[in-house]
Length: 533
Image (tube, rainbow, N blue to C red; front, side, top):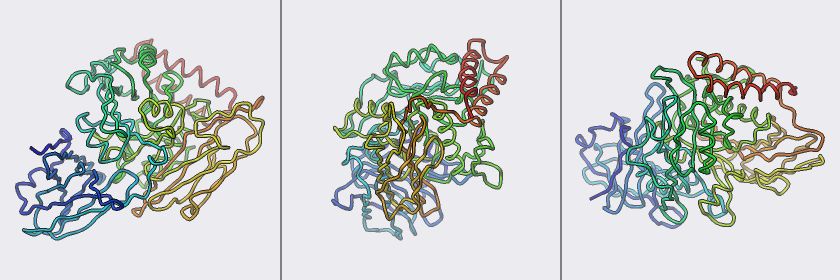
């Protein structure tokens, strides 16, 4: 029997019942253009009236995962089927049908429009690969996935993501441990063992989200953080953070901040001390941006993030908010590595749409991928490819006892639709820029360093539908003797304000030991603000 996996509870009413009304069957296959070999991919089917349709595998050995999530108010629609490398079939109405195949970030989409009749010739879609980063030792991961683990082998191949971290443990209630957790996946605790799809596609099943919306049954948002790569259940409740932080360390887990607009993010960084900041997060979508009005914390005026006529952040403004929050934390001395994760499963976005590429020139393995990620030998992207060295060193490097002078940044930046610009970021400011970089994908930029701080590189792509896509390296850190980094007063003042506002909001709701975490964060930010300028 054909194996079809469904994204539980997500299949849109737009697609339900269409098979019964269908009058024809289309069949086809997806191949890699260079080799002519079948390849796993994501498939979109839309008829002439605008209705979406879902496919299935046409062979018993094949697999198909149907996914349908909509945000009607914003026109954000993601309805597709991820297919194994086997032929597909779909029941659709007669008439005009647009068929589109996509595969991760390194292939150009293939699309055709046909007229479906009683007998329609099989369709062949050929995907052209414009980048092959794995061949150069760069392997990708989606570090935040809300999909059932059973779907992940299909997704890993169809999206060509080398490492997936699907959620298992999940709590949304303050004081309720993530294990067992009120939203934890059914089916029992996963063993802390890699699931091997093939030699370059792996799944780590033990991952946890703490996402607190209620206190003692009453609505009271605190925020969220993500733990991935640990070995077992986290049985310590949050808040406070000390006990769960100890468990995470004991189990070798990594903590990620998730999103800049969670209320507790400013407090979380000095208290829980995450290694990672989710620079490309689950509000970055392939389809229309749809969460500008969701702002438990809004970008402050000094950030000057772009807003629409309604006063809400645009997609570019949302990305800018994350960048400027991240840079403020880096300027405070928190050595955070950027990550990318989609949260596919709760939002209209494919798995792997935003991903983290990690450099493993010695060859791919889970252990070395995690070690290189932790060291910052990585870049994040939802479009461009960005490979850079800083005076010959990889991102994540620490320049100790640097005596001042120029640091030369060599880069190679490419994108499916050309790189619009490349920017060298020094302590949160653009230090150098190349505009119209599509014609010169390789080059060099320089930054003059006189005091301690950090450098990173970012690249922007403008897509045909006028969307900005971002690639961003992890920083390098520079230590100049007798010239320590100086935080920016506007940034430390805002971080202090955020923590003070949250402490006030939580008084009378959270226990004293939970409020103590906010006091600890305030102490850290006050010390930073005292030497800021």
